[in-house]
Image 1 (cartoon, rainbow, N blue to C red):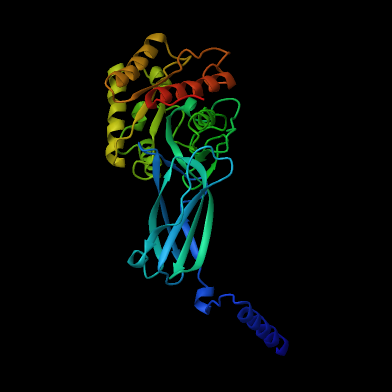
Image 2 (cartoon, rainbow, N blue to C red):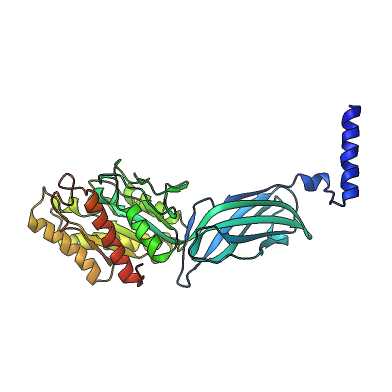
Length: 360
């Protein structure tokens, strides 16, 4: 015990003689916890090429100010860091220590986000989070060729491309979370094309299920529609660039008339806008081919999809009805490597045309 007291006394004497600041017991125990955002989170950029990054967390002791700054990580090709910016102060910090605020960032990343708390001029707690991005966010929906039935599985080459599984953001490696099946999809390939063209991170969330007719997605009570709403809402208001819809093969088998197909999907898009609280663009692919259906039924479904384009209910997505045979399909229905590459490229061409993206 005497030795411990002597060591403590020596340490105190050293601090006093060296001029280093002495923290009180309360200050020494201050911790700051950041609950949002989380690593690999991508925020949808707006028309001004920016996004407000929502931050929330808590400190376990009374502080005067919580502030944050962003720094571009090494290798980022777009974006601009910030200095320290106050995100909460005074009464904006709850008595229990909770705080929330926003930090506006330019499109780009990845960013490193640092958050600190101050009492007066003294920093009493600090934490940091790597890999926050401002870029493009998409929800994908439809049936098997929108899900994980391609062969082989795909993996993004660009580490800025991620999938969201409803809880965490993960590197874009198939099978994409939320999509049925255990194979590959076009989405990581599309993500690579967008990241290269735009220099921003890209996120996809899947709401796809195989063997579904469009009627299986009807609002308000089908499980597919409720899941679609949840997928969009998880990114917050204006948090998704667009829904990418690739579906129709099952409707060809069901002999769905063009008017019926168009009316049903329009009902879904209008309900989703209402339930999510903002006008969410849709891109609808022309996808009607199935080897078990006949050409007249396929033409009806394709016509219904084209009607949506003409009525400006949805933007024109890729046409995949001509990607046929062993050159593009592994089993006559689902895409092989060449088919997945072509599918992704056509999605990129549709997005580039609508948003006037430049290709690099």
